[in-house]
Image (cartoon, rainbow, N blue to C red; front, side):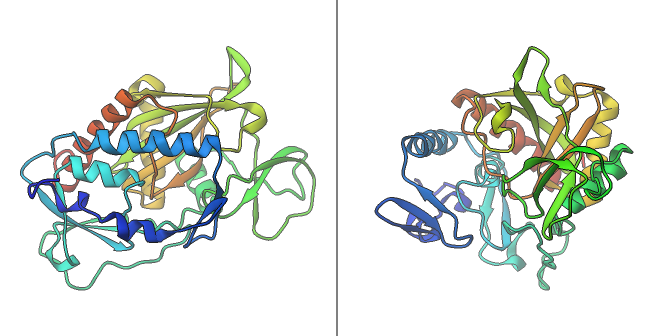
Length: 319
């Protein structure tokens, strides 16, 4: 790296490698305690990520540069904002008082963090209104934005329902038959039939990246219906929001982001094949990505589009 490389991309490997504890058969994520075994599939995913990591560094950062500060955590290289902010021309500020942009960044379901007290005049604050991405709050915001109910009461609902953890990114959903007793810490939602019309063995998630509350791009993620709640995609494609949603639906997605205060992040949109209606079932303010299964050229295209949108948002253009 040269001295001209934005500081946000100069994170020392020794620093972020401390996030992991490496063992003989797998690694452990220190913050969450999640254990990832060494396996051929995991090794392949790591290889694909490093290909993107190095390819993203070839994107010439936009000029003039601006400074950014992440709090209470620093964005690591595997988070999408890391490559996007670098391409947008961001340099990492040493403290919040020096930053043009201050972004709340905490990989947690609940993050009631207030902005730092000492800030530059005119600083752009990002995601400080997004304090709760629990499944309960997502269902509430979905109903407010789309006018239809996602959550169900398992004790009175009759028929199938999705039971899953309240906590974000658990990937532990399962379909149960109701009525059934409510389990503490679990939420219950209607089953969205998002199977592909051309192949009922596959479900289709429309992972929509948003900046400034507006959809910027869509990752179509397809997986086997038996693995619908896992993050094991068999196909990933990049599309524009206009290709996937109507003008009314785009506004509804934006309304959802306003409901939860999401200014940067991704939402999981499902289209029910029985009636064509949309539901948002998940929201993430600390997006990783782009999805591993997407081809490398489209990963770079996605990074460029997001960086352009992020730069315009934080500098006030088109906000």
